[in-house]
Length: 186
Image 1 (cartoon, rainbow, N blue to C red):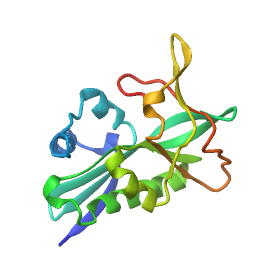
Image 2 (image 1 turned 90 degrees about the horizontal axis):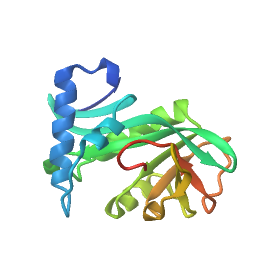
Image 3 (image 1 turned 180 degrees about the horizontal axis):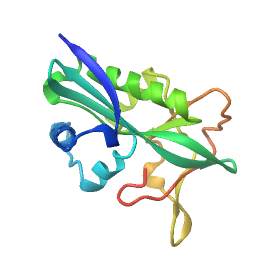
Image 4 (image 1 turned 180 degrees about the vertical axis):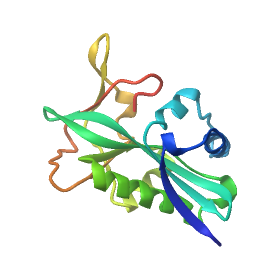
């Protein structure tokens, strides 16, 4: 990290060129992950409408994370949740602290405006998040669907992590239900 700078901006504050650069970064970073993977149009849509943490080394965009608002249901409460999406670092810059830098900014947003932080993590990234204080959700997960009500999401069990905040009571062995969205619901 020679000239690291992390900025926060709402989607509405980013120009079309800046959004295109973020999308290109995410497409490249996800494709370069072990096992590869596409960053879909639905994934892109999930990352919009909230705050973006943008890491730059000089003028180069090298990292990104976004925080969008969602409602997660737990123990009869609808929790205002800062949900982390689209965390990525350019492949040639991984392991240099850029991921931690964008997560520092994302976590500041969560602590400043939400009752809970949450994210869905690939198994390979679990250690990164738990080292930052995120806790793996151990209970069953579900989604509140528009047509069929609450449906279990067993394929997501074990991949959801939460960042508990003061004043929010959680039982991480209990049920957790997310609001509906197209694409991957978690």
